Amino acid sequence: QVQLVESGGGLVQPGGSLTLSCVVSGITFEISSMAWYRQAPGKQRELVASIDHYYDKDYADSVKGRFTISRDNAKATAYLQMSSLKREDTAAYYCNLYKTLAARADYWGQGTQVTVSS
Image 1 (cartoon, rainbow, N blue to C red):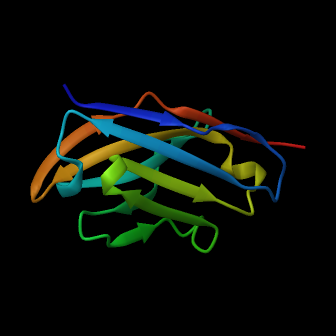
Image 2 (image 1 turned 135 degrees about the vertical axis):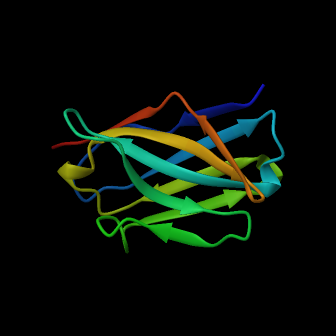
C-alpha cells in the first residue's frame, strides 16, 4: 500500500520560511517522480514544483526563486523549502507521486495547511 504523509505546515508571517516534508512508503522511492501541489480556498489545485528520479526540477513561475524542491532517497522523503512567503502562498499543500520510471502513477498525501499571515 503506497502512502504519502506530509508534515511541516503551519502559520508563518509574510517574508518568513517553512519547509514541508513528504515521507513515502510502499513503493520504490528512488525511481519515483514527485511533485508538490497547492489549493487555496475557491481556487483550483495548481502545480507548485516537481522533481523526477534524475533530480530534474521544475517550478511554477509564481514560486521561482523562492521555493526549492528536493529529495532524500535514503529517507524516502521529498521536501519543499519555502522562503519569502507571501499571503498568496496560503493554501493546502499536497504531495504527489506521479511517475515511477516511465510509468504514470497518481498517489497523493492528505495535505498540510500553510497560512501566511501577520
